Length: 129
Image 1 (tube, rainbow, N blue to C red):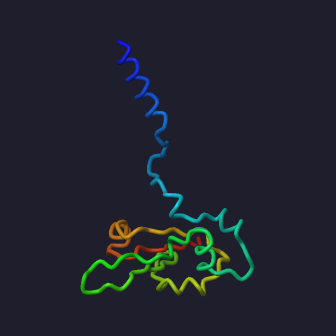
Image 2: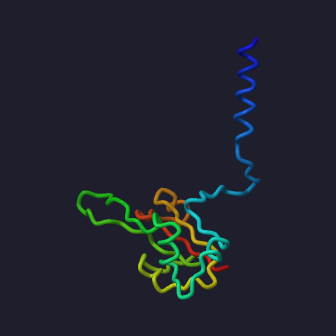
Image 3: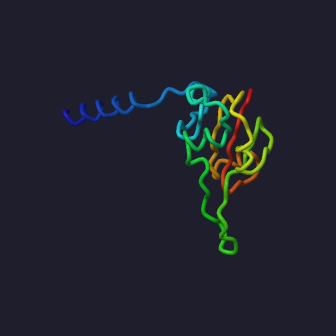
C-alpha cells in the first residue's frame, strides 16, 4: 500500500512539472530565440544583426560539420528575412537591428519541415513584423 501511495505521489509530481502549452502553440526553445525585449535591452547605436547575435547567441553563427566525405567545407546557416531568403551569414553584417522583432535559429533537422528543403547549416530567421 505504501509503494502505491509513493507511486501516486511520484506521478503527481511529474505531472506538475509538465509545461502548459496552449492549443495551437509550438514551444520555442529559448536558446534558439532572441526576442524583441532582448533586442531592446541590448540596443547599441550602429549595431547590426550580426553584432547582436554574436553577443547574445554566438552559437547561431557557428558552422556545422560537413555532411559528406567528398566535401569537408564547414556549413553555415542561411539567413531568412520575413520569410524570404536574405543571403549568407555575412549578410547579417549589413542588416540594422532597427525594426527587428525577433531572430530565431532553426537547426538543420527542422529546416525540411519549415522551408521544404534541408539546409545543412540550419537557418537564421529574422522577423521585422
